[in-house]
Image (cartoon, rainbow, N blue to C red):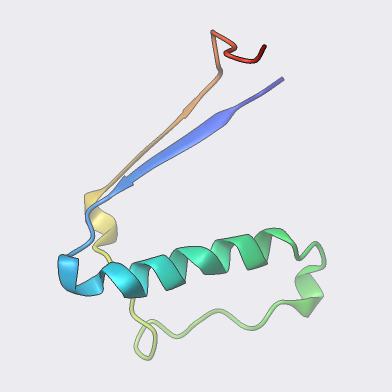
Length: 69
């Protein structure tokens, strides 16, 4: 069964490129299946998020229509 996660994040224009780089890290994390190979969590003091997490909207949905041919 398919499932779709959606996110809307308010990113200041000044942080646009930082956010794109930050989001790209998710693809790298997806390819790692062994948690023992992951680096320790990032220190938020040294690597702050490029967006305000309090302004994050998210939701999960099961598709009701398929647009595949």
